[in-house]
Length: 280
DNA sequence: AATGTGACCTGGCTGC
DNA sequence: TGCAGCCAGGTCACAT
View 1 (cartoon, chains in turn blue, brown, red):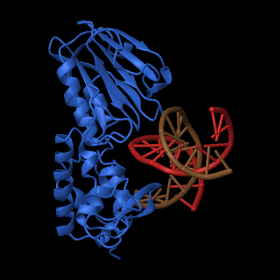
View 2: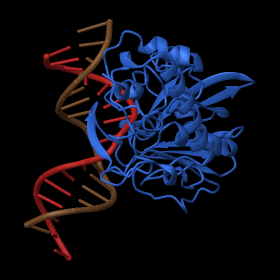
View 3: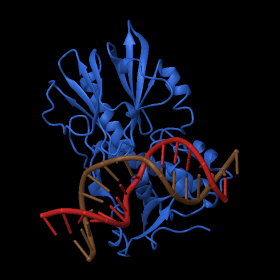
View 4: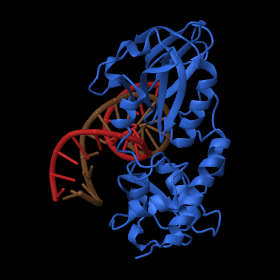
């Protein structure tokens, strides 16, 4: 389940492998994984990789020609998507099923997009600016850099609860069910608390916790539950630090109360009814 | 306009 | 052992 820390680890592991390389051949095994209105311009075939970027949970692969930016692709990993780099054209450590796109590089290396559940996808754009001005335009500030002032402004006069607000990528980009549950537990806020009940001090604290948690999760290589691996095939280690996510009906690590679940915005939320206050 | 809900998709788990 | 049914959740279309 890749959220921001996992996507950031994919980005950093991938950029070391592919920046500067030229794509010699692309195979699209499953065309419906290519989304969006514009059909791919050869999925970067013949292009040289300039940089690997990220915004929220989305990755971007930028290419260049004589120093200027050329076509780019945006990759969303969805729930089970993964990107894997193999130094040779073989697929030694990569599962062969559910590979939808394969890129081959000038050095003989291969790069795969695999996504069993196909919630992910790839979007192509003629320039990075097109990507920013269309697909990324509606996203809120990236969760790593969002400020208390930006979040306060986004939450002003809203009637929804804090859990669904933090899951909304238009308010803050990069958080998903796992990290939102962990952040709300750390802040001692019940997931159903209406955002209008939170004061400026609480929102500032929320933002500090978001930054700290994401920083620690990125440092730990992200979290692995079932599927996630970075581009080298390594698993994350942050899941061992979870306080609530995946611990329904177990004891709260702070107060020993049995953790409960509630469905918010169609997602299972685990929380401690003793530690987390429902402001009304 | 803002918010809520269900569909998409498939691997893994549980219960019979 | 094999099968059916349920659950997981990011995003989007549609309903309220």
